[in-house]
Structures are given as C-alpha cells and as structure tokens.
Image (tube, rainbow, N blue to C red):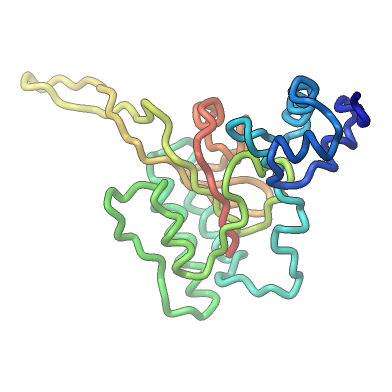
Length: 229
C-alpha cells in the first residue's frame, strides 16, 4: 500500500540528496514500480536518477557560495570589460585565449602578480579547470544536472567538454594554387565567462543555448563545470 502519492510534487522535493533508490522507496512507502513514476516526475523537475541506484538531486542554491563579503580573486569588472572589448561577432576558435586574457587583466587589476598558466597538453579549453583552481577559482557546479538551481554571477567561468565530431572548416591551398575548405576535428571543448548579462567567450553568447556556447554542446549534454573567482 502506497502511503505517499509519488505523483505529488512535494514528494519529489522531500527526497534526500544522494539517498539510494531502496532507501527512498522505504521512506516513501512505495514499491519499485511506483518509484518509476516518481523518477519520471523527478526528471521533470530537474532531478536525476543516476544509474538507477542514486537519486542525485541538484544541490540547493544555498550550497553555492553566497557570502556577500567574499572578495573575488580577480577584478571581475575589469576582466568582464576586457572580455567584452575583445569579443568578435561570431566564433573564432579562440575562446580559451579570450577568456584567459580577460582573467589576466582581472588578476592584474586586483593587484595579483600571478597569471593563469596556459601550458596544457593540447591547449584545449576543456583542460582549463585545474588552471582556474590553481589561481583561486572555486568549482561550484560539477555537472549539467545542477544548472536548474544555479544563478550566474559576474566573473563565473564555465568549462565545457568536447562533443564527438567537434571541429571547424579551415582553408587549405591546393598544389595548383586554388583554395578550398576542409573539415578539421578539434576536440577542444569550450570556455566562457559571465559578464553580468551574457556568457562571453571569443564572441557574446546572446542567443539560444547561452551557457552552452552552442546547440551541439547542449544537444550532446557534454560534461561541464562552473568556477567562481
């Protein structure tokens, strides 16, 4: 006998973060068939059942840094302004350099002598997480499942992993001197900073997927993380 209606929204929101499916079933007084209905409602409200064994709720907003007295490791106004000034009208495949340049401006304006380390194995945007943490950024979002409770703050940086087939068209010159465009794989991922209004990389991401940087990143639900200065 079901003691709690699994279709009730409050039931979903009362489930404990990280509890096993068996524990949730026991606490709610439901069997596994009824829990499947609960899982469907959970997904509708932005919750997630990982591998059918853990109910992985996005952390509440209160778990994100909210200290009004927190002093960012960079001057976020200077960094955002520098990023906006250097942005192009469309992607140029230089998102990592654009964001790193802006961060260095922010570090300098904040009176810091350190600069972000640009030496990574492939110089890809998706490798930027450890470099951000090394200069004092804190990871506040670890996956897309947590975005429903996330409110961006000026200076936040998102790092996206690549999707299969990510690349661009490049110009090559044939032996006869003619030119053509060929597809080149570039599994680089993506990086962008929030300027207080938009996510900006080497271009302002004003349309569509915004934080994702492009529809293919969102469609493929690539791994992502958000770092706060």
